[in-house]
Image 1 (cartoon, rainbow, N blue to C red):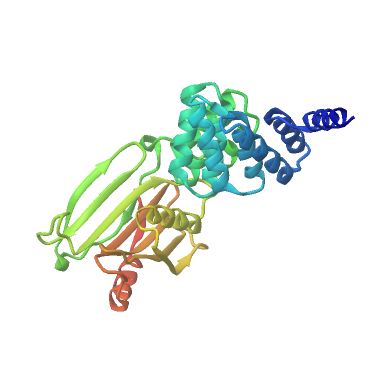
Image 2: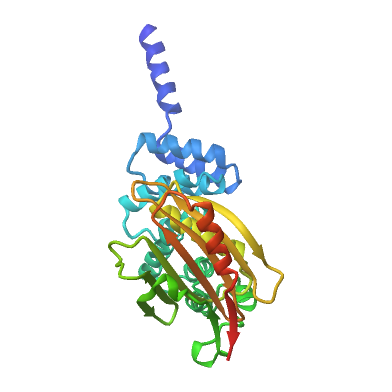
Length: 322
């Protein structure tokens, strides 16, 4: 009799044991029903039983994406890519998560990989195009949207209509330039002048200083205007880029006029790391081009007198048309 009781108990326990696949299937059903917290729990149980379960990592990451747990989602997508290096959907979802964290370069890198693995992936072109619009790379962003539209992504046309109708080649644009007079008395000289189809960058140094020993530097950049973008958005983009090299950077808004014909904004970005650099920036929108200027000093903060001087300098800047 005792033997029969023990045998019956063993059979009951075995029948109730769940496998990694069971938990995965349960998590998938919960995710389909938008119960993402429960799905994360069951995908985690599947992974505990099988730590090489690629799809479980991927689907747990996707559920975390819906829960806005972006950093943890990125970790899961990265694990699924480690287990399956050509996992197209994992790259695409990881790019989407990075975009939510304003990691624009990381997002573009992942969408680049999606397109490399699947050149007909319309949604990857669509998302990469959106990122490029956010970082003011209008021509390339609109080209991606056009490709997405060609490949059948129905969302692309709306963005093309909103942001890309005014994008034309520089050769046929109406002549427009920025008038900015760097004081001769301060000894400014052009130290670098670079131009591509997407941007123009001029760097200035004072007197006989070089890029290795400068104390104050000036920079002027020109990009195509992204239709619908505001000077506030561009300010945030520049700040996010600065934080990549100086995570402790501090942004301080100074002044703006976004109601005028050529909207502009002034702000400071200060970095107090071991090799400090602080800047006063000016963003100004023309009809077709965006003009980005800043002056920098190798100090943890911009001294008040220097800030006042630079602000007054940037307020003399104007846009002229040919």
